[in-house]
Length: 383
View 1 (cartoon, one colour):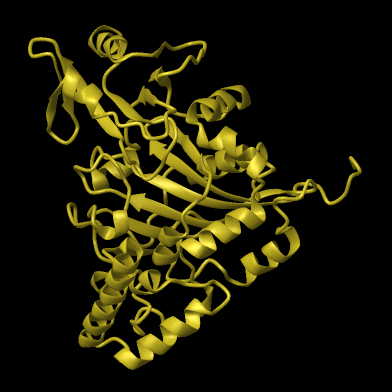
View 2 (cartoon, helix red, strand yellow):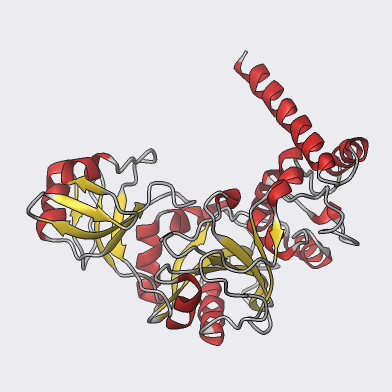
């Protein structure tokens, strides 16, 4: 029954989106329906929900663009399964393990202050607590503020919070969004569905050159890297531009108010900016808080960031299709994480073109053998 209701709800939502976009002067409803069916059966198996989210019905945005190169969740998981070896998953999905590797490899990352989890884990250099009481004591007496807390395993900033300070008088933690939580309420808010726990790390500061655009909010760059047998190189690059009072740069399908920009992979210059989604998608708007025009802007520390992420990507040859999040901070670029199954939606909506283009198709044709033992070598010989 639940699956039938879900399916019916999706169909109603789909039809509503078709009608609304047609009213806005996009393609006629019949044309959209035919196009959705064609793309769903095309090479990228594009879902109807993604068709509407990207606003592919709007010819003004996608004139002369190959719509068959756009993909959604189906393509995302297919690319991951084809290009990334599942045996490498654990070292990137567990952030404590990943940061341990960063430390050994000399890759810059936000300093880890502490971790909390229910089972025994030992790491040198910072405490790991195993109970609510122990965590409460640590937050009162042993934590460095400001700090950023996030699940050890997980993505999309779900469960993440930035704590600015501890108020000993009221036994409260002040959050970056203006809320004040008692220590007990803060601990209770750390929902951990995976069982891997939470980490507490340095709250990095924004790069000086981005402050005139998004204030103290730290912006990040998503590097989509391809790694062939000669090394890693950028395939697509986007800049996630937060609003001034947002201390997370996640787009959340345009609901966060943040923006996302397409970046030229050779120069580091912004070439296109979007905000919103679907029929409310806007192209090249100014920043909503500062009025800054972003097209043509040079990303700060571009060469340093590109060198750092290229070097980092070399350490993970089992992942041919890599999605790195890199913070633009006051101490230069820092690596937040290597995403296990990287989303492709932000890249496509920022670029205004699909990821499954001729370049990626040729790469998949050559290297799409992720689950074979020969994933990152072409034969059994060493050289």
